[in-house]
Figure (cartoon, rainbow over the protein chains, first blue to last red):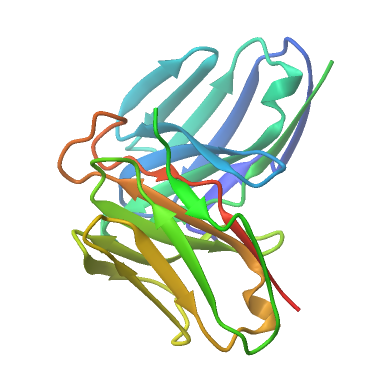
Length: 110
Length: 118
């Protein structure tokens, strides 16, 4: 069982839909990253969370430390949001290195 | 805002050759991380440096070595290349003190170097 699991693995939505991607982890963490990877391969950091909720534009990330769970929400989705979204955790016992989930492939159709 | 710079962006090598990948962190960032992402795989942590000293080591082969220089840039040296080394190599940077960009210790990624070993 992976330490970081994401669901769903693949998600197809229509433009304008509200999207939720989930991340569950089984280890103690000091922080959690949500990352976006486009087909060209580049990785963009969306959020780093250690508690509560963060919002940036149409993106919202929440984390529940007690339940070891985080969600990434996209409101009013757009085709340009199509990408792989990756949850990555900074384990309490492993310094600052990131342990990655397998990613969620999001496709938003016009 | 300045981002993490990696060079080269693409590299093609033959088996048993050597390769050097370079990473220039965001200004005022003191920590550099290297990750390897094989085809269809999650990125895996290789090694990290803080203030020019190795701070953590992951699944980095003995054929690979890395260092961080006085200007905080880092180089990943790969020798005796194998077909299985073909991957996307990411560098990320963060600040363990303070950075004008991002949260404490948040990692920012470079565009990656795509290495193909033939």
